[in-house]
Length: 238
Picture 1: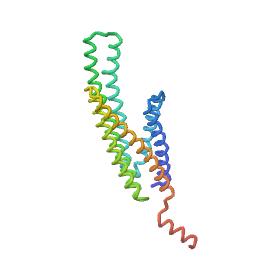
Picture 2: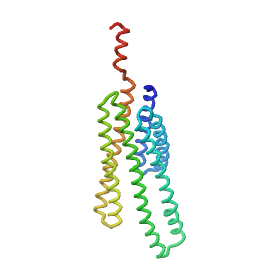
Picture 3: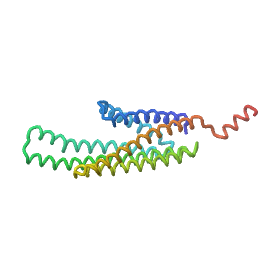
């Protein structure tokens, strides 16, 4: 395997991960840059997938991760298009031309379906993303067995934290919506705090991931097999 190419690929993942982590933070603060941040994130995500695919010769899990990431994008776009075209835009159009009571009842009924589809979209997005992340981290861990086995366990641990935080976000978000529409604002607030905490944990994890990628890049770049050291020692007469 070409070690120089692997080092370049890891550096690309490192740089793109920094951008995606920064964009994710901007996207959460609700500023006017949120829309631009989403576009930048998508472009970076696609580039990240391409790099993972190029790394498939170093570990088969990278190819699986890239495939699940592509499926995630396709599924999210299809569901978003369906939700917007079937419920959101028609509802806004009707609301702008009518204001009678029966129509409002129909809109509220559609709103319930709209919310359920949004929950489905969230679940699909996070679910596909989880599978892609699992195989990516597994690929990193298996790759590092030949260089520094301590990072194999670090990637496994990071995956467990990612899984727990993501499950918490899914559960608390669904509970938040249910209790908010049920009128129980106290429980809704409680679950919103849970969602916020889990989101912060995922942000911290994204920063740790960047650090791990940089360390991997550094370790593999400086790595020299033992037999190569022996050859160099023999050549210098030491």
